[in-house]
Length: 349
Image (cartoon, rainbow, N blue to C red; front, side, top):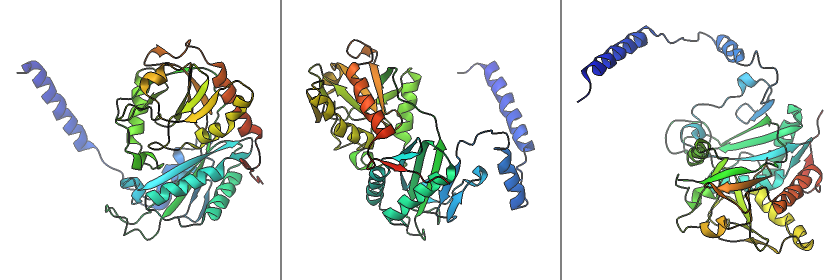
């Protein structure tokens, strides 16, 4: 039985809360202009807008007012998670690997049974024009394809058309050179159907990153049911063995990271220089992975992040690896001054 004093105090507290709730009055906005004024209050004291521009197919254009960067509450991406997304990097006025990301974006949409309201070439044009209108020279471009607004049912059959949204995020990032810690995630990973498409159902990813942060780590690593290394919640992971072979886990049951794929294309340069013995994309057990000489996360804004400890066990000598940084240099140089096939110059006005 509980302490009578505690029960009494709890009862009084509950009564007080009820009385306070009874006094609470919800404001009713009498006009759209009043609501708009309220929305603008949030941004009135912000010196530099974190989101300089948004596109909405619902509005049919580009929005520069952050107070109006909203999507309908009955959009099925909001209340049913029926949507996919992707991201591209803006660096020094160039969009990096936009076409590769767009291809993955449309593959994800096909798996999610969402038809795009525009062709790939039109989507591409919208994203380039949006970036130009934002005047952002460094940041990320994130875009979504949704089943669209229409109702609050489970089926999207009541949605008149799909919806396309995009936003430019003014974001500072640079080449990562400091090592971080990783942990093994206790959060179950997504099944292959959902893991291989970049969909908006990110609750497992959120819980996984929160678990890592609670343990003082940068991110957690998923291990599949067979005991093989999978991926991080928003990054791929790669290893350099004691024999100097670069190994990245197979993409069969995880997201095929665009940056990870580009790293696999660039890494043979280190093989030609005699620094790496080989580059492989295959399954790797936890035991094999933890015995690696070097380890790294791979993702768009990193692009390579050295991992120096996993589950409090040092990787290699517990320091940032030389080969890891050479791989990082390859990717960063590709982002900064790579071929035109990888970078699109944004036509800022």
